[in-house]
Image 1 (tube, rainbow, N blue to C red):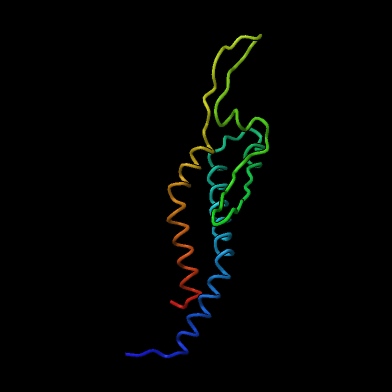
Image 2 (image 1 turned 30 degrees about the vertical axis):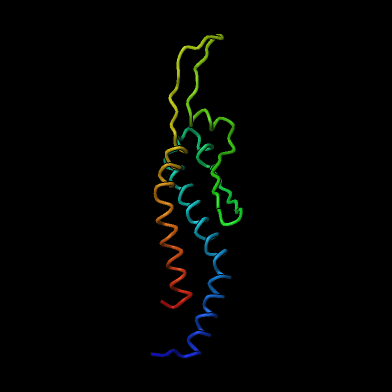
Length: 132
């Protein structure tokens, strides 16, 4: 039982390619998951004029080996729609509007599906680079 030295050289070259491609692969996957989350949160966002739905944004932070996806909305009343708010008339609280929790529900869903989706996409890229 033996091996060809050329196979070891090829394996080393593929591993170098994989190492270089890793950061790009992870960022690509993070962007895909962020865009998926934006689509889902927009579907759950109630619409009056459309401003709230149209202002969902994302930002990806990389610190070490950790990628953090931040989903946010720049409309000032977004947190009131998300979490609910009091109804005040003449200085007195007369009721409560329940929150829609569109962001919280999206985050919960993404936390459940992200690990498997991430692994699937990274493995696919590894197979492409290593030729398997």
